[in-house]
Length: 305
Image 1 (cartoon, rainbow, N blue to C red):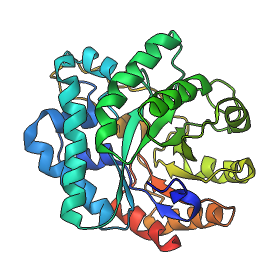
Image 2 (image 1 turned 90 degrees about the horizontal axis):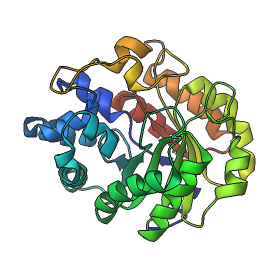
Image 3 (image 1 turned 180 degrees about the horizontal axis):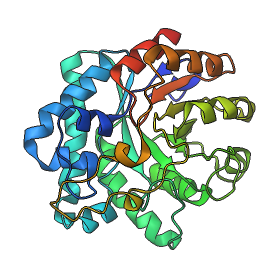
Image 4 (image 1 turned 60 degrees about the horizontal axis):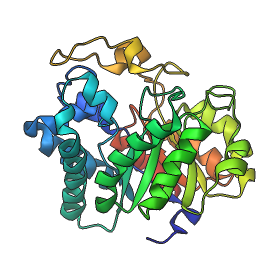
């Protein structure tokens, strides 16, 4: 792919997992969107959600592999399906691309390998092994890897090195707190100074509120790298890991995250457009959505191209 792809305004997709639930997915345990891969009757729904974002203006879709990290599968006693759920999610995204007949790119979601929104404090070799095992399944099917909601510089560094070994460019998705810092207290400037790799094609604030995005845009614009945001629409400005609100056992129906984290009704597509218009004026070129953003939101922000 063109490594300068994000030097001009590009539109990413919105929140796959919450769209699947809104459209009828029955999630089991803490598998969330991976339930739609394990149960083949939901495969067409995954394709349809991808297509809904493409048809709303997304130039990049993200594979439905966020909850297919190995530890999540082990916790839900389905680890034997690790290769299948990651590969099948990629194939469904490819199918959606083919059906759309549009020249979109596919980003491989390579998520934090333990709990979302917090630092992975395990030994670096263990983290590297987990990243590599998931990435090597995803990489052959995608244009680049998207480091999906990562909360520490060390994890970004490890995952970036894995991507380099697999010869894949990387879009770095960093989760930020209200103060604009990672959960470790690191600044984005420190992350770039310590860990920036030649494989990086952009840096985005991942699964953060539009308000945090707006507050961070000026600082990120000074870092000399294509940047942007995949904002969420949770009511809770600093979301917590799934284990804090979903205690469903394997094969039990899981709790919809929006029951605990809330779903904002005050941010329509036009409202998100206004938020993003301000960050585009500060230099942002990578525009998309995360949890609870819909095709309507993507359609409106696509007008910023």
